[in-house]
Image (cartoon, rainbow, N blue to C red; front, side, top):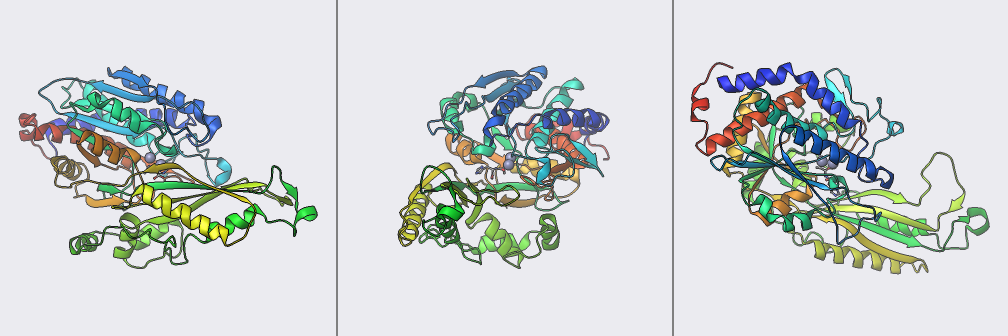
Length: 487
Ligand SMILES: C[C@H](N)C(=O)N[C@@H](Cc1c[nH]cn1)C(=O)O
Ligand SMILES: [Zn+2]
Ligand SMILES: [Zn+2]
């Protein structure tokens, strides 16, 4: 049940939901794709729009210039990072929210029913690139803060924000900035990230772990220019043939990574952990339906969850230089770059995996006796993250979830990567929690990405309730918690 104060806030949020959706529409309209070089200006524009929104709420905003020691793949200017704060009451706890306002690429031709950059509501779902990853959750947090202000209520916590525009590109330059700005985090008590999804379409979740990621580029080159396949096909070692053989050597048909040594440091599965998997409510059919895929590599809940959360996986993402447009172009590409990544887990070591992969690819390549040039590089890598679910921050979030959704959350890990999670935990030593508001069928990185109106609005209420619960952890708001009325 919720308190009188919570009811007042919930009512405000319900009444203003269309305005919140309108702002999301304005944000989705900015093509802040951090992957494609020609969109980098839009990412900066999106960061500035976010900064304006925070300033309008009364926050002090600093735009920090990012400069990465590891140059961006496209050597373009990086968009600035937002460090903002609102409220400095030493009696109150300080909560820092992390989110990102860049998105994955999207084109209508990829199979979207609606324009990906025009947020469109169909049957209670708000479709658009970034709707759930991550503009919707960032705005839900801002809406929650704004609701206290609009109602002239004292904010229960001090707020800090760290918002970036390069997450989808691997959070380039972020680690350096966090290290250089440790003072910003010195008075932060809790860090909350909302950049993943529930495990189910309906049941809320709290996330205490993510996998890391190591992204590889494998370049094979024969000459300086493409060649006619009629005039030269049959007499040269083709780079694409080499590359496909290399990519095909990485993983077997059961999904097992074939690189020797890769599994050596994977933490072994404990009995306690096995029980955690057994206890989780997981609708395999629903999960499968969300993907549109008929058969998974595994059949049981335990196998599926453990292979998503605590074992590594290898995915092949694409080939640069290969002709992928419709029609047949009878050329032999001179240079092709294969891209794949390994989602890595505790206690795998990024530099060891990197060495194992490079050695393996060089061995496979040398057996082909190809005169072509092979170059392997690692443009992006990020560490896995696991948190302590007994931290008071998790207790506060469980209570807030129960208040808003009327049910206990599923305690989950996530197979994806939030590079900042481990960085913040390591560098600041503060409690880090991931509190998703999107449902499992939101389609992150996919066509028809969406967030439902229900999740966006209830998510806003959840964040507002979390502020109150965190204040209670610090002995604040005793009165509010005692003035309980029926929900
Ligand atoms: C989970 C988050 N919304 C996300 O999509 N993160 C990206 C980050 C990344 C990792 N490698 C490159 N980018 C992801 O997990 O793919
Ligand atoms: Zn994201
Ligand atoms: Zn993403």
